[in-house]
Length: 129
Image 1 (tube, one colour):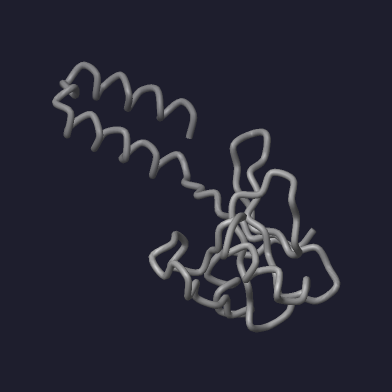
Image 2: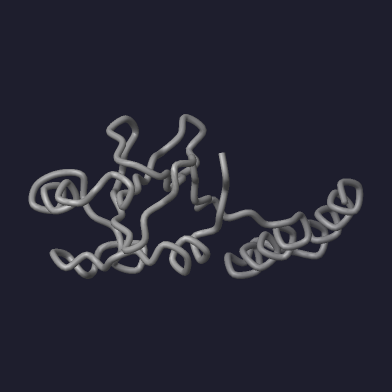
């Protein structure tokens, strides 16, 4: 299965804005899986429809085609997908160094961080990086 980013998905396939509910998530590109929005999605060819699915391990992907199982939202694109399986990876990934600074920032904001905890965290992260 070919994997692309959400930015590449938007640029390459040109998702259509939700004209029924323009304030919907994903920049207004997603459509609900029921009611008027579902009826609207079903008016398009399968090769212009994409499905946001949730996996068992709490990850989310937009996959090419109209799917029912584990669906959360639908997308309609101006440009059709080719006959291959494509997934758009929506799962934010960060490296250990970024995670370290995010944790430190959170602890500072919550007034939990003190010099002893900060030293322990630095020692811990120096062992795993």
